[in-house]
Amino acid sequence: MEWTEDRIALRGSRCARCGETDFPPQAACRRCGATETHTVRLPDRGVLWSWTIQRFPPPSPPYVPRSGEFEPFGLGYVELPGEVIVEALLTDADPAALRIGMPLRLIPFEVLSHCGERAITFAFAPETEGDRQ
Image 1 (cartoon, helix red, strand yellow):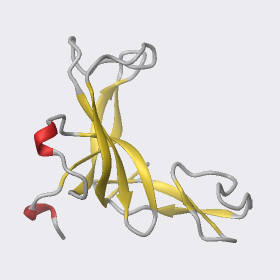
Image 2 (tube, helix red, strand yellow):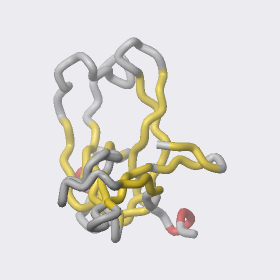
Image 3 (spheres, helix red, strand yellow):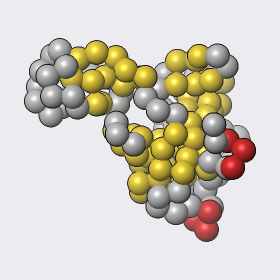
């Protein structure tokens, strides 16, 4: 993950031999096993490939609730077209608002670390007309 011009970006790795893209970056290709990989910046837009709502607290640690009480949260697989499918937090936990194929955008997302400090990770949010570039 990196910050560029006040925006968040995900980094993956691409195999120089077969072209497979991995996330997170890997030293060896998961498809062919080659160790000739290089870092690539992944798209910040994707589509929801599959999703679920986590309705109970995961085992602790390392999970730390965002507030004092557990709140259900969305988890999904997001397809970054032409690249890779990534597992990620979703900003929406309403099943009526989520649908396979919906456009999503990458955003920074604040969480608490296992030691109680605020940290920034990434999540995907529904894309709106105003988000499109």
